[in-house]
Length: 112
Length: 115
Image 1 (cartoon, each protein chain N blue to C red):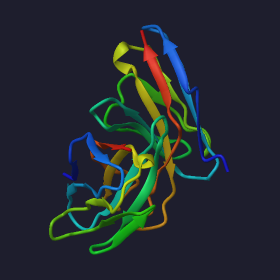
Image 2 (image 1 turned 135 degrees about the horizontal axis):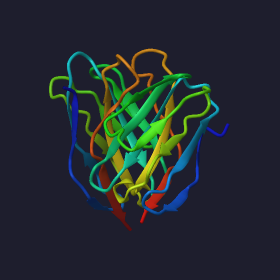
Image 3 (image 1 turned 180 degrees about the vertical axis):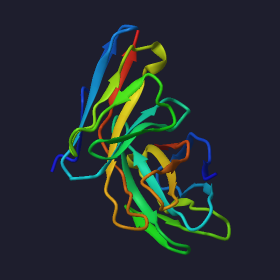
Image 4 (image 1 turned 30 degrees about the vertical axis):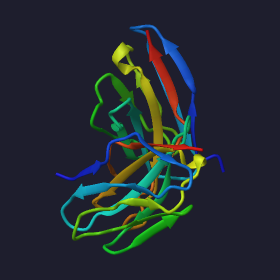
């Protein structure tokens, strides 16, 4: 069946460091891929998405490229800020229904 | 535009009590769902609905009941609360318009403690 695997956290970085959060998936066909972010005390919100191979999703300085050959959708940011501290979830949809398959989430802590 | 509204934000129950978590959306989304979030376990789907009068079970439905009498509302009922139901609950909704279109809009969450 479909599944999503994220790197375990917490990930702790200093401000202005480069960020990578790894996400790999298992799915048949051509899924859509998503990154959601959950700031402290809030619900999740969509950060970015990609719907086909080699698509790059981007938002708020974050980027992720849909790599079908490596079944990956790693999240990157060139220079993180304290305000980026949050939990990040990778998810996929097989596009046949509304359901999303979720990774376990990665907590990111940015220190000033 | 309020999006997805959940009430209450916080609730403390005693074992065996019942209660209803409310969820309302004003985006005319056909799909609505309930998740629970526990430390180290990510999000787990409890129940979902693809339209008024239609509901189905998710990954962890036991101990919970739902109904969907209108497009806007999707309440989650705890029939007899147990300490294992202590969690943060999120309601989420979406519409469908093709590939990758099932982007969920989440409520702010309801933190439930069962003593």
